[in-house]
Length: 195
Image (cartoon, rainbow, N blue to C red; front, side, top):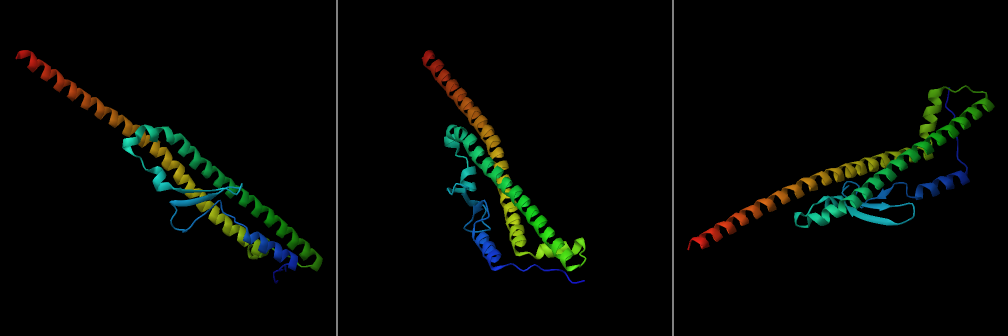
């Protein structure tokens, strides 16, 4: 039995075009493969540019400043991850709604025509729908974005651990240096006392 195809009206086609012109990702990239350089576009329209590599670097000579800035950096990237995951969830919900709408349309059209549709034929017809395909691609992109931001969030957790270790090592080195200087000073004082 041939599958039922739904033709879009001119108005529906224009609506789909309009939706396709709107940005669908949480962030835009200058280069899709360079995930370390990101531009985050929030719903408010504001854009923030960031370089994860630079953000993750630790300057040992500025360890106190780095420790002070760490919570804000972690909060920023964790928030971006949360927003990107919300985008994934929203796209899934929108796809489910579109799937339900299409399924209903196909079933109603089949009843009117007196044709019988299988679940498989309905699934195939849904996946051929242009709007559904665009949503599916947007979902793939959103999942990729969420994965990248999860990696960033996790990297900032590791950055915090690394800074604690680094600051402990630096403190230990200062203690050793101080002990050596104190010992040298005391030795020099003893030598002066013998003269």
